[in-house]
Length: 322
Length: 283
Ligand SMILES: Nc1ncnc2c1ncn2[C@@H]1O[C@H](COP(=O)(O)OP(=O)(O)OP(=O)(O)O)[C@@H](O)[C@H]1O
Ligand SMILES: [Mg+2]
Image (cartoon, rainbow over all chains, first blue to last red; front, side, top):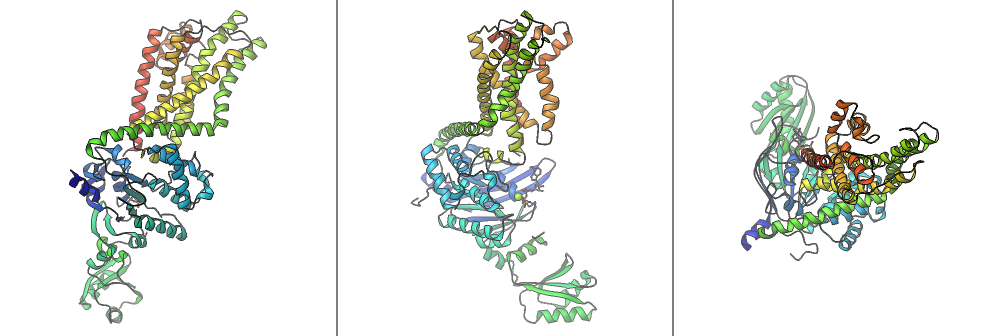
């Protein structure tokens, strides 16, 4: 049994064919297989409506799966939700702080909910406020906190009972750049400290900066799963060139496809033509030449080194930024 | 693990059930403690909202009216009977209002724009017990208000109030009434949302109170037979009649009807409330 337990602990999240169909036949998550190891920061990256919150909801017992299985810390979340709740910490997408209590009391009662005695919970609440640089706000109502402070308090609350896994749903959405970086620092420290983290985001930089491994999902389906570096390499592209021009772009795409023999892919989407190439040397003048010979006027031309953004675009055919 | 911050260790399957039972019990009492703390912090709201309505009711009907010669129930003996009769109604009414004010209204808010409920259901306990804690805390609020309101109803009237306390009934009926109203609050809290909550007062609470045997004993409805039968769907009727039996010599509905009806309504509201709560927090 000790062996079993050991392996269960090392794999902190495990899902198989996890599926959620909401009433009205809305397929939000479609057969997701995930495995998150202890100590990892794991990212779920996807556009609005991809199923990120639904996936996190199922792993945190709030959404009941309609198919498949999900384990957190070796506990089946459907069969034993109460036990599962003991080993998870959750920072949801919206502010769910207790408006009737002060900043300090929010932490104190959270500790009590999770079985701490009064003395321990008091000491922990005070210590966490210090750690998250909120001590000077201890006695104010939570409605008086800025968005960044409220988010820090929610993270402090979520880790207070020492969860095996910390879930964060779009933790930096709506934060100003400064607060965002402050939160990244906090998550980095927790990571160094060994905290397993699953976060959802639709910010490429965030995923790239923070995550050890990433699952890219869209329409509830897993499109790719790897480290950010491998994802960028695995797509087999060195660069994406975006061509803006006047005229029939579908025809321009086929012109470029014919003249650029080394292009991996040429397509016309969203009012531009995208060209994926292994090798950039001499390509930009060649594109202008080919286009102008066929009567197109190139109005803009830009090339991008592979980023998660280009990975995402090549996987889904669409831009992650709205 | 030697880290400074040891994390939750995965419980062995054999101890899982036991450790969740302990966690559930602790979380339940911690939630109660949280609610009591909020009550203490908001005492400045709790006292006026609890005391003002019954005070005005008793003051106008049993002090002002007899003094200006416009008594309800006539003058002299009739007025005294009315004051006595009203005691039970006022106590019942204030317990029901606690169910709505301490359970239903905060819950509508927590389900609504604050979404606080999402954090509450992450406490390590079954979701149904998160709902039951609301009922328990509403019942406790009801008990406090009954204790506060009873002296008002007994002292303010201009005409003497004749109390005749039946302790066995009082001691069993009070907790039952408080529980029933807590469960009623849970049901209303999950049935209404922030857009529809004005309707709660307009079309639910108003008929419940005016047709709840607060201002008149149920038996006195005899001449209007259809109404007398119709109001039997109102849980407040049994509660007020029960307090009449517990506190006063006024004739009341049979205890053989009061207890089963209140137990039945308690069960119904518990079931409606918990399933409504689950529907709202789990998807
Ligand atoms: N309670 C619900 N009932 C019905 N459909 C839902 C519900 N919650 C989500 N959906 C649908 O499921 C799909 C996935 O939603 P989800 O919230 O998981 O996406 P997301 O990736 O978190 O998006 P966002 O970036 O906007 O937060 C969407 O099509 C959404 O409309
Ligand atoms: Mg979401």
